[in-house]
Length: 280
Image 1 (cartoon, rainbow, N blue to C red):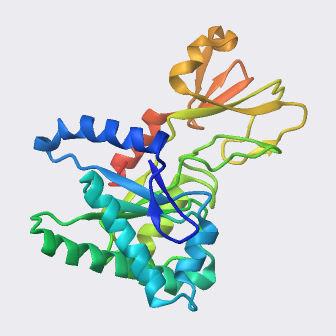
Image 2 (image 1 turned 90 degrees about the horizontal axis):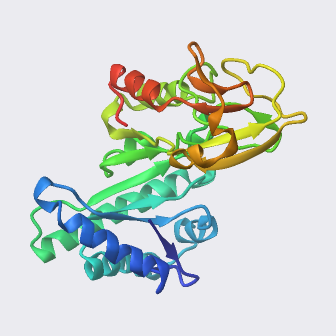
């Protein structure tokens, strides 16, 4: 779950929905502590770009940075959680050094707090990263990986367009917009595949009135089709078109529903990822 950054550039939980969700999660996770399961929260999200830009700005004061770091520690202590994820979705290229320095400062702040608390285990620190290769140039991954435990790569939404139709999370094919292309880039840059997690979509996009076949790798123009519509996989059977015959398009890695509705194969992705020693 996301914890928002306030206008004052401090981390704070929502006093309604987020507050309830945190305690619900903590109750569930506490039952699995003996198995090493840990609980984290994410700072930021899609709406936090402006706040992250202010925090990483070269004009930001030391007091501003310290106040932000202390607010993270306060939330960690209040809910007794094990770490955080910094979720700045698309940092600009010009912020690549300030962003790396922020991650370094967070790790150092967490380590100092661990020592003060007498905690045996390190706090967990992770970040999110975009799926498009062009956006990954805004990260100094080889430096960032010195301070984070893992990176969650947002490989669950390659195609979410009002003008195109195609698999939302293609495993292979497209030289830039596919899991294979993204992970090859990251692994070649860092030589550390075990540091990267693939985000697997638990939902699908579908379109109706698609009257032509799709290319195996590249999205197609939308034309007269309607959509995209987003839906969790578990809800598909409730829809009128759930009675459509389903067939596998073997060389494409997504399902074809009577040539009208298209989704992606999670099983195929998992087999391929494990075969290539990539974490899911």
